[in-house]
Length: 432
Ligand code: DLL
Image (cartoon, rainbow, N blue to C red; front, side, top):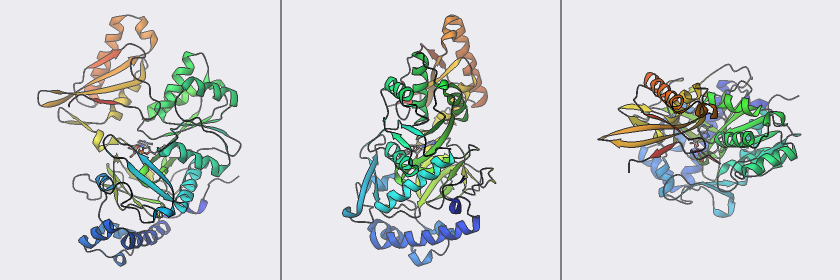
């Protein structure tokens, strides 16, 4: 039984990997210099010629790319190929204005399928699986990206898309789905609905979940695993780099990056200097093999760290820690940096709390303040108002102790917090 989808690259020794990355970087820089005026100008300004890129270490000579560069060149200004050579365009909406486009050549699409196949294989998906794809199908890369992977493995794909949760559960029962693809928050919505209508998902054939597209804590993973009776795996990616397929968790639940396709760096978001392995900073990616719109040193805004680990799964691919949050989601409450995921971890420590929460950010004088809203398990409400208030007080005290901020906690009536069908909205900004 083969252990890896692509043994050569998934287990390539570091030195060989770096050699390969260097060669691909050189090709990509030349490709962009010859075809994309934006990059030619940027490289000229830095005084860097494609020939100066001799090894992967030379990446530090290259300019960064930021989200605004994509917006300014919307929709296809950064494309390195003609429109006739594109076979697909995805896009991500973001919060404001024009979307970010993700164009693919036929070869880019094949690479994407390959990266997705590595992921699904590592997570235990096989050709006899019935996979229910509940990621949004459309411009979002989740649905069609996972479709490509499932196709590559020749699974039986059920493209439900997200939403219509009762129907998801019915199909899961009727078709005997063995794998679920969705965001973690939507998986939780499915669990909750199933419990409500009296369906025990743990008794169904579903055994693997491939969840991603938003931050979630280890505690949240365990909760979903227990309530669904599955192994909950992780997918990481972004539209600008292909979509899902950038990183995937293995049997040891470590998230490996496909670093032969996307070269990762961690930099200090203010100085843009690289930080040492294991230290937190902003994740930056360079596309090494793409042709339609490869980006150089793209600042993702995601905050995490990288590690070189002798992983028991046998992969040598670099390991990425959980995404703590995005630098633009980072809240500064009474001078303390707070990521929603830190609050999630604390809430999940409390058995009486549901894993449903929202952070409301508002102005208190000149400073930002935050209120935490969550729901309690039904039995807590049964114990009366004092029990509900007591839970709120204990969570607030724990947040004070761990994060060091004074944030009021409100336990809302069951079902008040909007349930997610895609990416959950955790922060409600009332500052404007
Ligand atoms: O979310 C691609 C994707 C689809 C990944 C399905 C995994 C599964 P975008 O919509 O462009 O692409 O959003 C990218 O989502 O920069 C992170 O902030 C966040 N994100 C994605 N995966 C994870 C994850 C898709 N596993 C942005 N953990 C990224 C934390 C994640 N954040």
